[in-house]
Structures are given as C-alpha cells and as structure tokens.
Length: 508
Image (cartoon, rainbow, N blue to C red; front, side, top):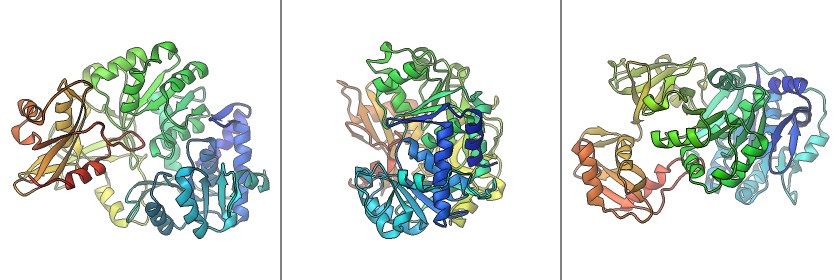
C-alpha cells in the first residue's frame, strides 16, 4: 500500500475525470498520472530515489500535488517548506534536511528561499514553478517533457517514509513528523470510514495546502478518486459561488473562516444544498455557531479533534452538537484513549490527565529527533500533550494543552478555560490567554481581548466577570485590549506573538 499506486488506480478507473481544478488549469486523472510519471522519471534520471529528501515550497495549486505524487512514486521523502518562513528559518531548514532536489514556486514570498536554494541545490535538481525568468534551475514543464512517460522503475514499500510534516522548531532543531505510505494511506481511507466519503465527492479547499490540514484533506480526496477545487485564498463570495457552480459536497474550514462565511453579505445569494460534509478543524465552534452553520450552510457539520502527530482522534458529528457540543466527540473507529496522570498511571473516571492514544494513524516518530520520539511514544502510547477526560458516555472533554498550562501560585490554570469564560461576556468578540513571569505568583494570567464593535468595557470589569464564574485564582491578573488577535496562516491564535507582547511589559 503506497500513495503513488492510488493515482495509478484512479487513472485506470477515471482517466477523463477532473482530479484537480485550480486558478490556472484543470487536470484529469489520466493527465495527472502521466505528468507525475514523467516527473518521477526525471528525478530518477538525476539519481534521486528511495530515501532521498526532496523539498517543495509550492502554494495552493495543482503542482503541489503533482510533486507529492512524483516523489511518492520513487520512494523519496517530501519535505514541504512554508513559503512564509523567514530567510533565517529557510536557511536552518535547508542545512538540517539537506534535500537532494527542490521544487520551488517563484513568488514574492519565496525570493529569499530561492536565493538560498540556488546556493545549496544543483541547477538541474532545482525545479521552478511559475517562473517568468528561469534563474539557475529547470522549469517544471521542461522537467516533465524531459521525463519518460512510462511507469517509474522503483520499488516502494508501504513502510517507506513518504512525508516529513514540520510542526515546530524551524529556527532551531526542527520537529518533523515522519509518516510512511501505509499510515498516510490509512489517514486518507479514514475519510471514507469516518464520513462515508467516496469517489463521487466534489470538494473545495480554501485552507492553505502548505499546512498539514489543508494538504491532508486534498490528498484524501485524490486518494478516493474525487474532484478537488483549490482556492489560493479564502474569499467568501468566490467560495460560495464555487459551492453552487461545482455542486460541492465537501469542504473544510477553521472556526474563524466559518464565522466569516456566516456573516458574509453573499451567503443568501448562493445555494449550498449540495454540501453534505462541512468539516471544522483547528479549533472549536461554539454551540451557537454550530447551530447556525447547520441551518445556513450544511446540516452535515463535522468537527474533528486531530493533530499532525496522531491524525484524527475524535469527531463531533451532526447529531452530537445539541447535547455534546461542549466536548470534542467520541474517539473514531481506530483510536483507543487512555487518560494518565503525571506518574503515567491511568486516572479515575472524569479525572483530568494527559490524553494518550493507540492508533494506526499516528506518525512513526520525529526525523532525527530520538528524544522527542521517545517522549511521544513512551510506554507504547502516543502522548498528545493535551489535558482532558472521558465522561461516562465516552465523550472526550479537553481542558487545554500541557505546554499552555500556567502555574500560578503553584496551581495549574488552563488558558482555554478562562477564554471560554470571557467569551460569554457580551462585550467580548475574541480573546486569548497566556501566562507571564511574575515575582508574586511565579506565573500570572493575562488576557488579550478584542471587543465587539461599539462595545465599551474595562479590564477591572472583565476580571470581576471571570471571578463570578471561575475560581478566583483563575481570573486574569492583567487584561490588554487589541484591535485583533495575531493569527497563523491557518487561523489559529499565534500565542508566540502574544507571549512576546507580555515580555515587553513590567512584571506584576
């Protein structure tokens, strides 16, 4: 079982069917299969093969997946580079991974990376995409024309590494999740088992595919033989127009984009009745937003609790929102959950602890990082770093992240709990909570708050509001108001930037 074979099968079953549609072109399964065979053979002719590392920095377009399938067909390892990384981060990554070949989309964000890659990669192994002017490198279309269209002569085992998914540490020692073909294929098949999806799906992806969530969703659709429409950026009108025109059956959003869609003036202008699956990732929808999304977008709304390291863990489906919307749902078919305390012992029912898993969807470890691998797989269980508990009905509740936990006055405080409390204040539109060093408390809690338009509120009233619904020691010691919270490209709150802001302040 390997990723490359899935494209061979789909080209045989659906040769004239559209596989990928992006802003530049449409490619069928037959065309996709031939182009990736040619590209794979081009790499083989250059001596790139099994176990070699191949970098790619390509945005939300068909070429991103042509490169992935070509790499898969020869048993090499793909290493996606985020084109938003700084020059320092890119330099660190190039030095650490030392890719044998590199695929790079020529765009403003990749100018620094291109300069670095030209100095690190031989010209015939630096393949450029969308380049008006070819520097020291080869255009991707030229590489495809030079490649033999026959099936690549490479033996790829299901346990061979397929992809290195970067999760953190790009400026120091990179933390790269290593996943093999067999496990990635299971993650793709899970879309069928958990959601009932199949080759008839017409999917829309507007999340960045250089992030693992967006890339994984597209790969699953292609593995199953469906059609995927890719948008470079999220635009509510274009998004809704595409759902109606293409009769989209599946899409995935992060909570902030789902709310933006619901507030769009364009929502009432387009039909979304074809949408059978609306996946939510990267955060939790409130019960109110979930109810509105079910009524106005799709009744088939699914929220997944997942991670790059473990794959999908639980799901909240359409039937769960009314009664169990405060949970992250039940574990999916292949996941066994165990809650442990700091000593590694299983906790009592409803007692919070670290969420540990056994699942065939988990990564094999972290590339060249045995310490992190051993910590993640201690005792034969995958350690998620999340804190939570299982209720008597088997639903999983999450309190927060171990690494986000604030130790204030010797007591563990979870920012997520305080954020949930503050969101219930009528003046609060958005909030994020972090800890900062304090001489009095060791660590103290600070809330960054975005107010609703025209709302007025002061820090003292918000702190008092928290004390009325939480233990007094959990209330923030400081509140700072912002026009907007900093977010990552996937829409998640960028806690690193908030921590940097706290470090600029005097201690309490």
